Length: 220
Image (cartoon, rainbow, N blue to C red; front, top):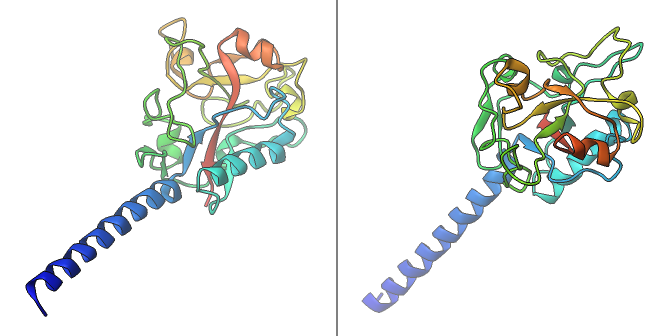
């Protein structure tokens, strides 16, 4: 084998190795993702078609981002006679964002000292979601949950927009993904339980700094 041939073969091998590495890195980012904030609302405000519709929305966005191989669940609670806790729907963790950053190792950390903030609460596309210091402010994320991830069981007040079937009357608990609010207190800094929305339609959600976005977690 001549030196020229050997050099050509080594060069080709190097290019193939670099290409394979780049492809593996790209696939690893999508397939390793276990958490994201939805890049858009399905179109009807807090009327998500119930939990099933919300889960389908998460799954659809994940699939478009190359992570459809995982089982995705919306971080939402419901009330009524058989309440459902958001924390019971999303698996055990750990959960990484689209850039591979760990948002939380497990449920305990997620509902305690987690790493969820403006810089890490990215969409399925790896993009940042506007916080209260940006325009338009879209930091209100629908959850219907208390700070520990449980439902408002037994409450007479609507905190889930009629279990995610109302795009008009009602109210939903929201969290601040940027961990900021009008005051420097625990609710304002809460990622999942900051305040009730002013309504369930898109205009009402926008009026307090929201866009009808959700947290999605891989449950497997």
